[in-house]
Image (cartoon, rainbow, N blue to C red; front, side, top):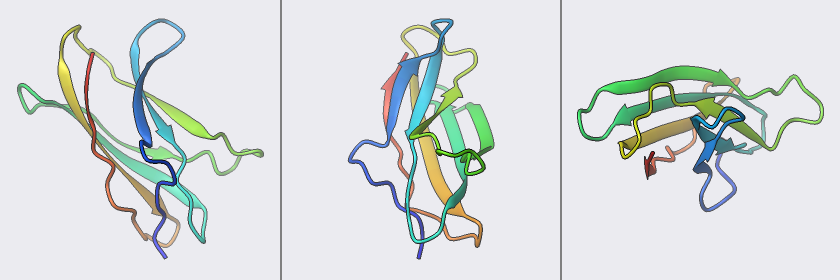
Length: 104
C-alpha cells in the first residue's frame, strides 16, 4: 500500500533559524515506513526549478521527527512558488502528490 499524508495540509512555508524560507513536510504514514520524499519546488512566475531533490525521511532516527524542513534557496520576497512532494516507501510505492502554492 502506498504511503499517504495524514494531515489536510502536509506542506507549509516556514522560516528557518536564520530567517530564510523553508518548506515544512509533515511526515506521511502507511503500512511501511516512508523511505524518502521526492521534492520539487518551482518558481511559479518563470517555471524555473528552485529545488529538485530526494530527501530521506529520517527513518533511521528514533523517535522519527514529525516533520522535515527543506530550505528554499534563493527565495525572493514577494515571489510565488509551487511545491510538489511525493512520499515513497522502500518498495517504490508512492503517495499522491501534495502540491500547494506559496508566497515568500
